[in-house]
Length: 192
Image 1 (cartoon, rainbow, N blue to C red):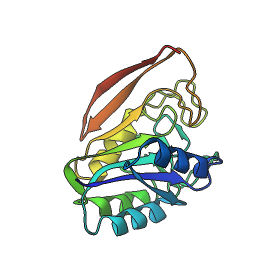
Image 2: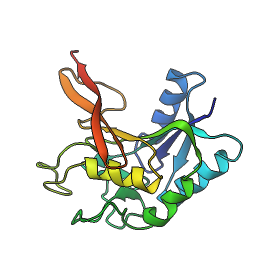
Image 3: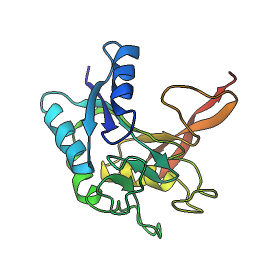
């Protein structure tokens, strides 16, 4: 059995609460690491993966369509040093900032069935109402992260999430992308 890791944004206002909830809710579940930048996350994950392959890596922070915070808190990081995102023109699957050079260092660290889950709000959604990147399709980020990791599957939800309370009537999908292909991995509905 490989590593299950949960990287939580250190500047997220509820990062320590979320860390305790993850640890409490899933005994024997993911090992929580608190991260402040993409570089910090890659360093900690690499250090932990010395003796074991990674089965799952969850990245928890604020999100938006095609944007996953990794140390940016509630602010949008425009550099790519504290977030995972593609260039604003979405002309390629190249990640912005340090993530482009650092994330590929995790190649070869994943098990045969390993995957990444981006756990920010609407990361896989469309940005028709996004204040960050209007009109963006979040699946481009999933495809870019997968390409950076040599084809490891990457998944995210296309709806809003809450760390403590699940609002009623939520409908959405868990989207999974591998290389250039995306599909609905699991429809999701919480009736309340």
